[in-house]
Figure 1 (tube, rainbow, N blue to C red):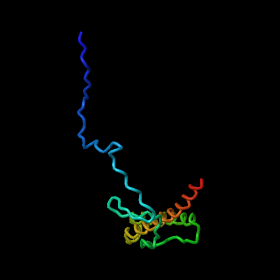
Figure 2 (figure 1 turned 45 degrees about the vertical axis):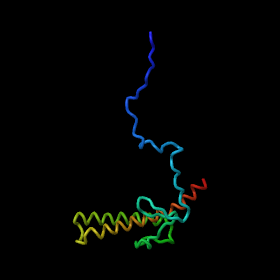
Figure 3 (figure 1 turned 90 degrees about the vertical axis):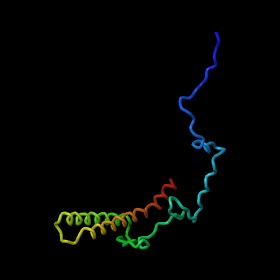
Figure 4 (figure 1 turned 180 degrees about the vertical axis):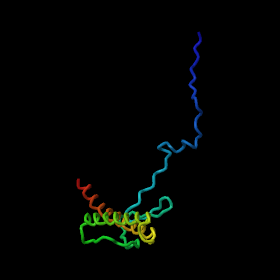
Length: 135
């Protein structure tokens, strides 16, 4: 009896070379170096900087609704109450129980309160990062 050599055949053909060329470590290009502190870089068409700084509300032409001299937690609670009050005014306006002031000014006031709350929460991030580093 004569033995034949077993031929191994793949069920699917090999993919085109352009799909796997450059995937081996020796063929892969080196990744770009990370930007250093103070440099600018472009990502998805926008220019960013590596400096970590929280822009002020005044720089973005927004009204500041909280006091820097009071504790931030108290100011957040006060802004939260203000947000609820503005939201109830907004609902009253939408239901027609208020004057014909319009809902757009109320929506703008709600947006201002939310932006102030967001900015105030972001001021906590530096302290939170320091605490996490010390742990």
